[in-house]
Image 1 (spheres, one colour):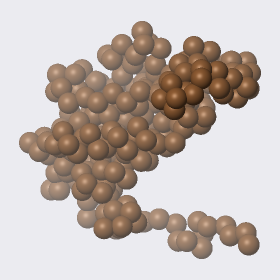
Image 2 (cartoon, helix red, strand yellow):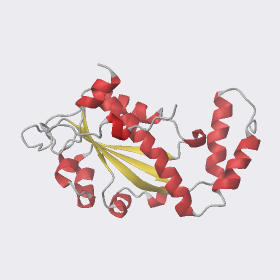
Image 3 (spheres, one colour):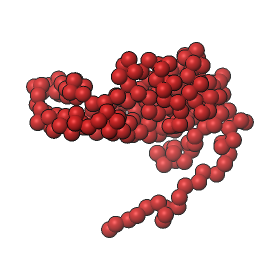
Image 4 (cartoon, one colour):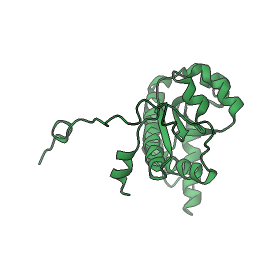
Length: 211
């Protein structure tokens, strides 16, 4: 199937079958799609936490607006963003990049100095807003890969970030949860959205063409 057909197939699942588990092979592919997502300046300023452990999911449930989905999905993916940019984090990424490319460290020094001049002079809140937007790109890639594999998923933005952060000890890792993604196989009988027509703006309302 084409990417468009896969996207037409998927929907935000509203009920999961707890007896069905996604294979490790497919989870690895979904994670890899997120890892390969483009990010601003190539900084990859977030981590992806993959949770299969049922006990941990049960502890996280109090932070969910749709607790049954969190409890019953096969895997929970937590996109956890850096709390802010730092000189050390930027240098780490670019040192790794030059090392992998066989280039001398500092090869991109003029560029990293430029982005440090921007990010390090912003507030932590301004930094985090920019960082969170990078995680959204990775979420989109993960959703598309899940659709290609015919694995059901649900993107989640509405949840109790503080609760998720506390249970996963994210503050101690200088991270903040920004997005969740439920992964599994839908319970078709209880998923009220399953058989509803997918509705999107018509192209003539969605697209503004400038030629």
